[in-house]
Image 1 (tube, rainbow, N blue to C red):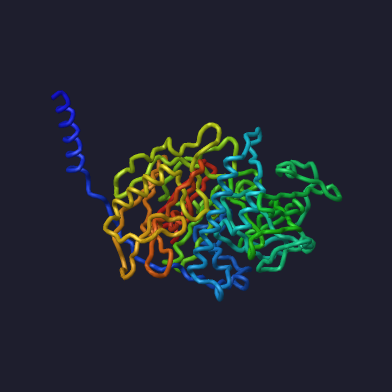
Image 2: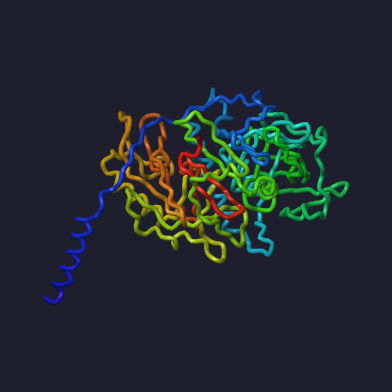
Amino acid sequence: MAGKPVSVAIFLSFFLSVSFSAPLQYQTLVLTSLPQPQTISWASQQESQVIETPSESETDFSLNLHHVDNLSPSSISTPESLFQLRLRRDAVRVEALSTLAATAPTNVSGKPHGFSSSVISGLAHGSGEYFTRLGVGTPAKYVYMVLDTGSDVVWIQCSPCRKCYTQSDPVFDPKKSKTFSGVACGSPLCRRLDSPGCGSQRKCLYQVSYGDGSFTVGDFSTETLTFRRRRVKNIALGCGHDNEGLFVGAGGLLGLGRGKLSFPTQAGRRFGKKFSYCLVDRSASSKPSSLLFGESAVSRKAVFTPLLTNPKLDTFYYVGLNGMSVGGARVPGITASLSKLDASGNGGVIVDSGTSVTRLNRPAYVALRDAFRAGASNLKRGPDFSLFDTCFDLSGKTEVKVPTVVMHFSGADVSLPASNYLIPVDSNGKFCFAFAGTMSGLSIIGNIQQQGFRVVFDLASNRVGFTANGCA
C-alpha cells in the first residue's frame, strides 16, 4: 500500500499535462515543385551600369546572387538531377567543414590550419551554392565568383594556365591589368598564408591541396575588385596558374569568412564591417537573391544573436543554439549544452551559406524529427529519400497544414516558414523534412533554412541577425 500515493501522483501529473497542454500551432504550406533552372544573361547585362538601392551611401554596395544550378546546361539538366547533385555536393561540403573544424590545431595567431584547402574544396564541389559577377583588375574583366561564408581566401584562375579547369568566361590575364601587383616574399601579407612559397623575383607563391587530390598553385597578389563600378583596391587574392579538380563554371571564389584573408576582413573598414545576404526560395520567387555591404545591410527589424569565437578556427560564424520548438512547444532534449562550443573549440553551431540542409548533432536531430512526426501525423508518410528519413506523399494536394518550427538562438527566436523545412524532392508530390543528423560535433545552419531571411553579419558588433521576409 505504500506505493499507492506515488502512483496516484504520477497519474495525476500525466493527466494534468495531457489535459491542459496547449494545442500545437500549425501553418499552411503551399505545395510547389522543384525549381526549374533559369537562364542567365549576365555576360551582357549591365556590367558597366550602376544599380543602387535608394538607401545606399557612398560606402554601400549591393550584388545580385544566383544559385549555382543556373550555371548547369539546362538542356541536359532536369530539376530532379540538379537536386540530387545538390545533395551530393552538400554531403561533401558538410564532411569538409566538419573535418576542418575537428582537425584545426590551436595556435597563437588563431589562423586556421588548411584555410586555403577549405577554399579549394569549396570550389571543387560547387560549394557556396550562390555566385555573383565581379570585375577583376583594371580595366575590369568580369567573371563569375562563388560566394562562401565558410572560406576566407579570394581566389581566381589566371593565365598563363599550366592547367586550368573550364570556366564560363575567359581566364583572367594579370598582365593586362594596370592594378595587379605581386606580393613580396616575407611580407606580412605573404606570411598570412598557411604555407607560403617564394618564386622568381622574390614574389610570394601559394600552393594548397586537399584530400581528394585537387590543388591550386599560383601567385599571391593584390588586385582591384569592382562591384557594379564600386572599386575596392588592394585586395589580396590567389592568382592560380595550375588548378585541378575544381568546380567547373565559376572563375573563382570570394571568401566571406571571418579569417584574416577574407574579403570582409580585408575591406571591412570601407563598409563598416557589415554585410548581409538574402537567399530567395527559387521555387516561389522571381526576385534575385542579393548581397549587401555597408549600413544598408543591417535591417532595423533584425533579431540578433552574439557571434561566438572558436579559439582554434577563425573562419566560421559560430552562434549559440539554445533550443527548438515544434508546434509552439519546446522540444525536450534540445538544450544549449547539446551543441555548445567548448573552450577547446569542439562542437558548436555555425551559420553557413554553402551548406543546403541544416545538420544537427544526432540526439538533437532525433528529438526534433520525432516531435515533427508527431505533429504531422495527419500527413501520409512516404519512403525515405537520400539523407531524409521523414518524408510525406502529398500528391494531389495544393496545400497542407504543418506544425511550426522555431530555432531559439541566444537572444533571437527565428520562426521558419513552412517551405524552409518541408521541401519538394521530386515532381510527384514527395516532400521531406529538410533537416538531417550528423555524428560530427559540428552543427550547421544551412541555406534552405535561411531562405527568405536577410542574414546580417555585423562584424563591428560581433553579432549575426535574421530578418524575416528580408528579400524585398
